[in-house]
Length: 188
Image 1 (cartoon, rainbow, N blue to C red):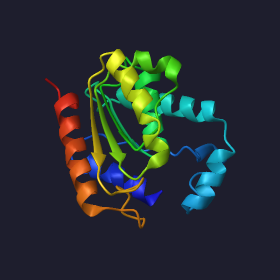
Image 2 (cartoon, rainbow, N blue to C red):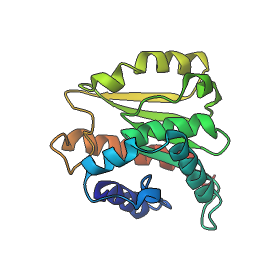
Image 3 (cartoon, rainbow, N blue to C red):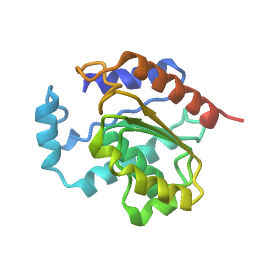
Image 4 (cartoon, helix red, strand yellow):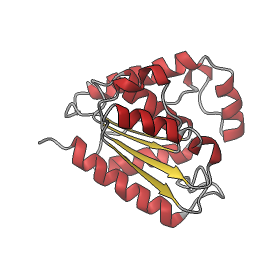
């Protein structure tokens, strides 16, 4: 959607190679509004979507302009995809930033190697309900992670195209994200 396209633009402007795969491509692509997009996505095979994102990550990591380090950032379902990628292809991911995303399947969480920068919204009861178990697994596996829970904001607080947008929290989360990527993705 236009918001995700803008996030990719912001990453490119910050000096990163940015790639925003369209999960709906096989159905003709993003339909122009999020409600129709959600309906289309719910009709798709989740395993296929996950495999498409794994293929996209592999493609980007091997891109001729890549330095060989790969960071992922995603929002909502994309936040889940970030968590899944960190667990499913741990040798490919060098930094992972899920915004209000649910964790990967429990049986693969132990695979995570990349540092995680996790952004959660205080008022997001659905995603936050998954956090205590996920955090326990991250601690048990001695993962490198930082979590920020932004006060008084809802799921989607970073999305400036919705009424849930919170400018102050969104700017802070984005500054933290760019600093995290600069720390973990720069060539040493």
